[in-house]
Length: 432
Image (cartoon, rainbow, N blue to C red; front, side):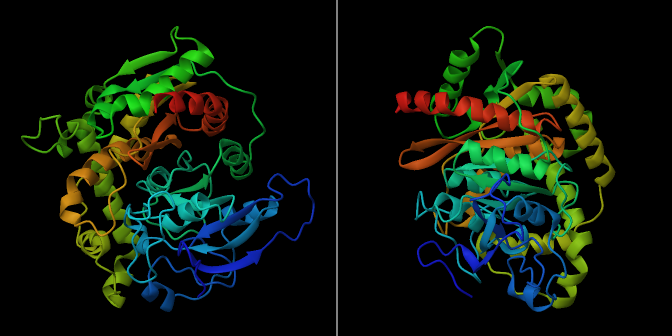
């Protein structure tokens, strides 16, 4: 296995191109890398773990999402390291090494699509494919200072992708600029080019920004000023406490509230309950997908981010409250659709703080993880699309903001980001 000497992001490097040589294809001239969770004909899909690779044959066919990119004219330069069994948001892998975060080498790159984010951030590829079930594109995009897109659930085929939890699995992608991000999206989503768009409203989730350890003005003010400059202050900008909306409109969450947990100093109770529901259904589906293999093979799973503990916790999980989890999904989708309408956008922090340091004791990260999943679970459980927008550096480390739009509004959201970004860069620069 050949690894990139500077960033250690690849499991293997190669060149794979479309059989068509047309320069008129939508992705001609672009290079990309693929997370080692996608099937590619003739290669063993590694799933981040050597025992998985050892016990599975080479794929007979290529995942449709990868084929679509190749048919669009892009050149694949290799496959990338990921967290073991896609079960972490840190990006550390004890078997294959941890890809080096180009923006902050002493910090985690984010996972589970760690290598895919690193190759883009380092300029080794123009874009890359990852997957996002609980946050595996959005977190590394934020930590590595690049764009990341989690599409609406179900709009891009996950066939030929090793599943984590089918209720949440999506094929996402990374890019360094919004133009490439949108070009890739048009190919994967099979949508026509869209004209510049104007949001009916942009709702700032004030309670979520207050929960972040990064000053809210540093994260949201550039966005606010950009929207005002492009679309006028008018009625576009609005503010909401998202936790109240979720509490009032998603009654099935009641059984997931932690007893006595009413303080909002460290979390938003309704979003913490949402995260709990997400993780309950994720464990259930992970167990159904991989429990038998784990019990039979008893794979060597490294200690990074307690992945081994969480994998076995999932295998031993009961089926309690699974039906209620599906009700939560339905209710949240309806609640957020009502909140945003057809062309509304919700702004939230992508993650609750700066990238953690490498090898941080997992126990000390628990509170951070809980806050992170309270943000990440919003798109996951609703099925909405979400884009991560880099906002430069704060205290020498990358920060970002995220925008969400209703299910099926992926093309609208990609177009909006491209419309916003030049002004947003100017506004963020003025805040430094």
